[in-house]
Image (cartoon, rainbow, N blue to C red):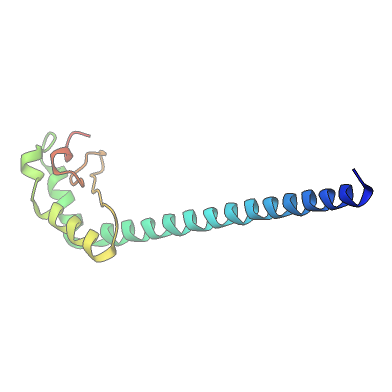
Length: 116
């Protein structure tokens, strides 16, 4: 190969490498920013739902009962309605409400509410 051809190929390889590295860095930064934004949004929604007095009262009532609530008692109850309303208002994919023992009182799939 001629010298000029070798230099052209070397320049093209360098430009390609720089573009690939810059693209990778920008994609990585973009993913980090999107993840941080999603985390912040989820935390804001969680704090808003947790601050609702109706949610607090419903969770306190469910926790006051001895034993684990049944799916039938939770399905379609006031907490499920509040979670569904919060999903509709915020655009969240799902909202799960748990008590202080980690028992799910609401779930996006109604048959999965308690005992998880």
